[in-house]
Image (cartoon, rainbow over all chains, first blue to last red; front, side, top):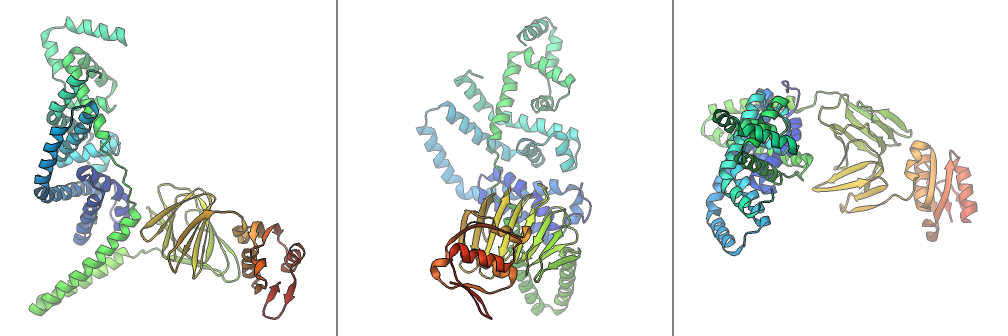
Length: 179
Length: 344
């Protein structure tokens, strides 16, 4: 895809920045934190000066790096926030009556959490398919993998998500039969 | 659809348990492929049959659809632009460099040999980086003194350079951006290419477009961007302003004040069209332009004349003729001295 030296560091930065930022955002749900993650990834890349060695798989590398950076960030943050979140979550459960909108909102949050738990490659492929709306073939080209792998990983992603969310999905279905 | 559904239903209920078992074990890969419309006709048929084979299958499939649909709401369209991000990134690199040098200094004090090694290595890296980062494209500068210059840029964009202005650009544009730097005044007609933004740097201000026409005028005090067609993005510091056709932006270089307003006349076009089109144009503005074009020093002697509105088009006329028209229509006296022409 990218030939050696064809693109400068600046080109690569500008080409991928927005998409990586959107990716980090879907993981962290915070624009500023997401920005910081992407900047960190590029900073590390620049320091190591290895961009040319990555030529064929730069997209795959960047998505992977952003994913890892975000997970590390969450790990550190979660220690701090664990207690707070716990309190908030409990309060919510006590106060709210289940309604369709709330259940859907919660499903959204659950999906988001479940996405974060997906293995890296799986998560990246899901991202490219869902949020960047690329076709399987385009994803395969971008990440330098086979279409078959994309197919497998997408199947795997949805399967994992379904298993994690099954309680919610059943709950939604029992409350509302209007599918 | 309904008929085919019942047919399938009927058909499937009389199938053997063995087949049912096969149909119950469809792969998630295939289902997702079907969901994303990536499946071929044969695969579509398999999934369709499977879905209708059992109500459990329908539930299963609907669950996948639900996940897929709900997950869409998690997407965002990043509001940050890559140019600002790149600027931030460059600042970081600079900071990083300084801290690296400090580190080297400490090592130098503790181990001279290692330090000199590192220094050589550092110098090599810096040299390599300079080579890598510097654009090996030849830079082209076009300058005007008293003339007006029409130039075509490497991408086919047209630029008209007013007198006492200059433009700097590479002989070949980069793959991802088209970048130029200007001083003075220029009119741009950008060749449309939405994948390769056109970026003009003028007095620390960045103007980003993909295919529009607009005028930029910059002097020591102000920068004015005036849009004739399309949309223009102006970035100044951390502010980003979008301008549409018929709008102009005035940025003061002293206090960074930004004023957005409607374009009311077409006088800015004078150096391109050789016409002075005044449409409710105040006299001071016309005088400004006349001074520039004819290289004269015309002064408005009476304050109440300054803002008098002029409605007229001067088509390739001499300065004397224009002054005569002003004299007649505004009833202003014209006094000529060696240093100046005074309207009063």
